[in-house]
Image (cartoon, rainbow, N blue to C red; front, top):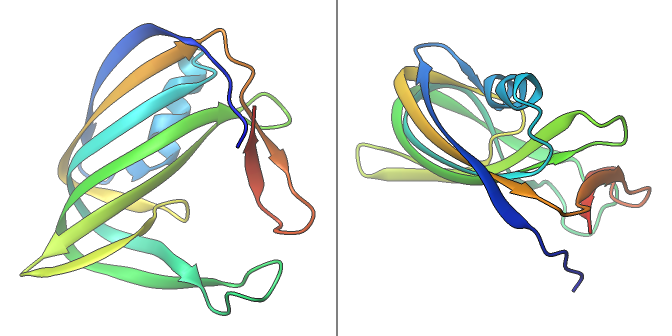
Length: 146
């Protein structure tokens, strides 16, 4: 394990509106407010998009993502981390559980899901840390480095 210590900076409360795309709208907000590193909590509804639910083959590198569609309005609760990529742009890695009619879909929202009616997010800015998302040759992902 690797770690980096920081401190809580600013705290933002966001209301995402119908058809806002997560994570794009949160990343745009982070750029506008110069948030380099942060913790995101998301609740509300999502209506469409795709969720990464794992690799097709766990032994294959780089992994081929298994995507499932979001069909219709789902309740959502998610947690994520914002960190700058190699070019300094804030990137949100967020996982969430989506529920509808007693069924749950859990995965990474990286491909993008659209808000249904409303989403609510809190961003806790973390200052004084060196965390970054850097390319990893083996996985093909931009992984958090501290």
